Length: 187
Figure 1 (cartoon, one colour):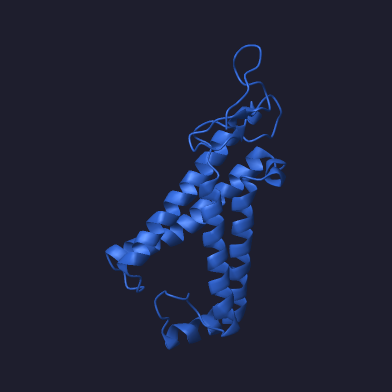
Figure 2 (figure 1 turned 90 degrees about the vertical axis):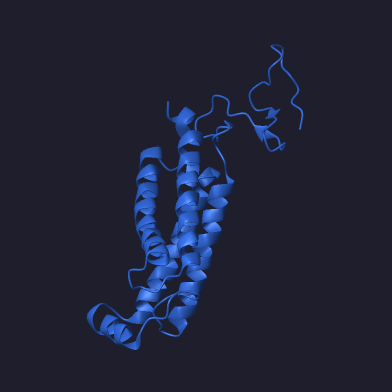
């Protein structure tokens, strides 16, 4: 999309400006809360993270319906571990439904980084929530990576380790994009 230059020969605020992808984007202009069109601001990592979180939620809901520990495609949880968890921690179905809800919340948070309603959330609060997400999900992904490539006894395979690397990479890209996109509005 070609921008129509203003009097200065540059696109005026609010006009379409070309992006690297060839798809026009709106220039950020002076309004607070507008997504910055700078090259470091990308939306696709947030959409990918949201899809991963929704897939996680669906998998956890499927296991909650059967009151099973674990995740579809993941290592099989031994019966003794299932019994111990149900006895010492909490009901398996409750734990899995809670995990499913956390997946939906994670997807909503990911989408909030690239949508107008998310822009209304104060930046420090959003950064705190994203840091918590990065730490919690990053810890789980790190276990998948280490067990998948080294083996610590959980049962994750090498391809789970690769998935863990992808998840961490997408989370970092999403947080970075949010920081870049909101930097101008914060100053």
